[in-house]
Image (cartoon, rainbow, N blue to C red; front, side, top):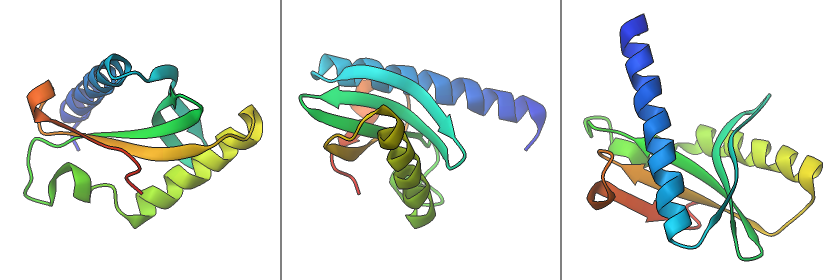
Length: 119
């Protein structure tokens, strides 16, 4: 990927994460942390829904040629997210948790799909 294209994707990705965080907060979740990074990868958003900790993967895919946003969260990505979440729970206290996905074809609430307990 060219540096300009890479920067454009990073900016779009950050905007999508901000939009998703705002959307989830409007729907009653509380933001705990953004972009938790560890050796296993990154968790886009960590939110609180009542007593449940929610690990959120945000995907923006404008082009569905390769399966769209949902298909991009494959088995390998799910395993990395689960390992990262386990590490987070080890260092921040064990809690009930779930994995949600926020999928977007563009940054617009009409183009957003929130899947609770996605995997």
